[in-house]
Length: 117
Image (cartoon, rainbow, N blue to C red; front, side, top):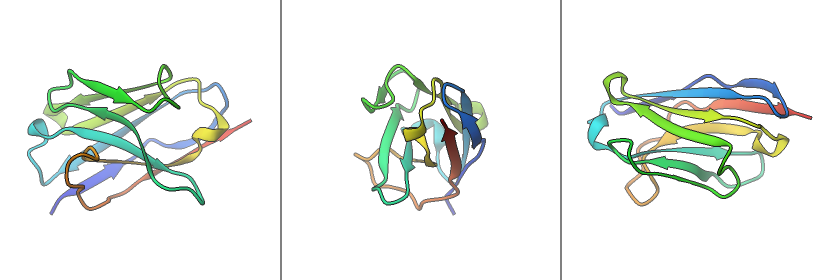
């Protein structure tokens, strides 16, 4: 009964920003580390950001470091991805899930981010 629902995506020009929320249910959210993943057409899914259960420790893929910020609101069972200085290569479907060192939950709803040049 785990459900992960990403939203907030859209079309944005290069250099623009988006903030993506992902709501989680069916798990003890506050005890669970979370991550954002993305998958572009023809490419494998990759983890772009990870956050610890309490929100203290974060990690980022080199490709997004300095531009993206992951955060969470445990009271709302929501993890966020703030994306700044977007590049066309950021175009992908973005999903949240558990970090890759933990068993993944069933993939839920992703949200399309398209960055135009």
